[in-house]
Image (tube, rainbow, N blue to C red):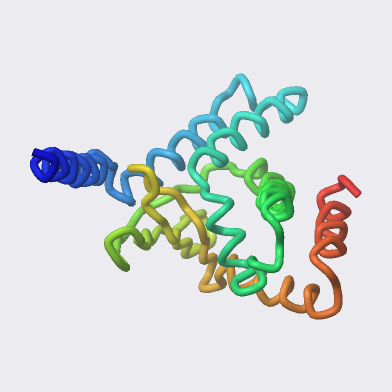
Length: 199
């Protein structure tokens, strides 16, 4: 009897897992939906005025936050050094990294005019990892933008961006590796707080 109950529970868990993966949008569909939502905000005539800039930023950031996995991004940035941080430090690092990226890229997004985003290719890197390739087309040039994505809890989320061949994770990994060679995790967090204006 117990074996039958265990067998039923096992089958139920496996079927639930497959159902979650089946219900998950394809990686390209997921990121395309997020980008289109951002573009809708940026193109909204009611939010074009300078007086509406902060509202526009808040709406864009709320979309980006839902589509990004900042914990995964942070783990990959710190790599082996991630384990040197205690859980509270890890949580704060993920939060600060999100804010740092928001500060850096938000101003660029606010300058968006009539650029077009075209999605060109989806590649499965493993069962739960994928890369989606796109390009931003303006009147003067095309900028390749690739998204690395991970499937968690039935949702595809971005954990790395490659802009014109330069990986966000690799770029920041080298920077924080240098910082942690000379400083403790607490000092590193203080440096990061100062960068985002919280120090």
